[in-house]
Length: 74
Image 1: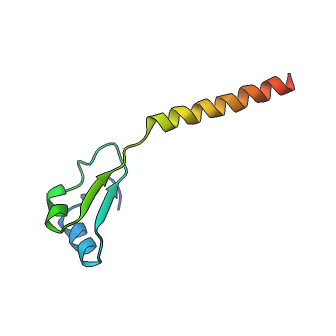
Image 2 (image 1 turned 30 degrees about the vertical axis):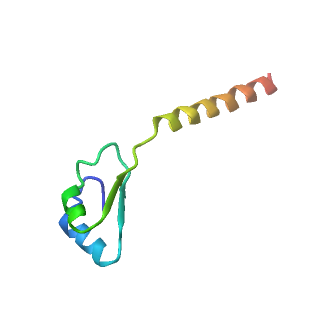
């Protein structure tokens, strides 16, 4: 399923029947997740937001490698 689809009754019913106990959404928000339906079927819902700190640290690392590489070859 994609993030633009509704995560509701049908999904949580099937997940519960298959023995699923938890669902995690990786996005900025969870407005496409029907939390009431998840509670109805006993499925825990979590949200994993995009980490901007990770992106900043990655950029810092890339720039550090680039500038150190330039120092070696200058």
